[in-house]
Length: 217
Image (tube, rainbow, N blue to C red; front, side):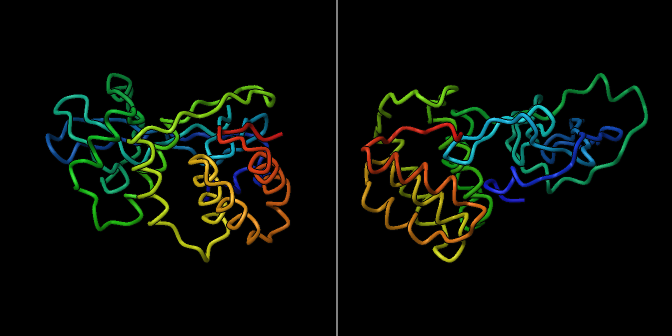
């Protein structure tokens, strides 16, 4: 499921099953993971960088950090078992990496060459660096420092011009960097009707010289 089509989900409720149990690949420490059978984005908040907050579609991180040995690992690569035992209540649930942990993961080069993983980590770092407005009329300019620019440029180089969702991401990255002409060039290539409203709002922000993340209406 891509980041820009989450709003299209039509499920009415979130359904959970027994939690999943997994072990750190470094030290075997047990962790739990939410086992979501279905969810929805009803009542969710969506931002122009693809980040969202939805009460019935919790974020299940791909990468997490072991609470015992500190290893950052891809939980999707770990064998998992569904547990009905109350013992799992004593194990911590996997957590989302914070800004410093994302920088550490990328700096380790452990995921260089694994394009999908590097894109994921760089998008998450981009989100962590973005101030996030909770009101549509918040227009405070985004400060772009060297670390922000480095990550944004690296992410731009990883994305595909043939995928509409990635075109939207490239348009938004360019807008965040203040490269408004490039933003408009990429956003003009997005033709899918489902993206029409978001395209309009990103385009309007670029034309007004606004580089900060916006909350979608």
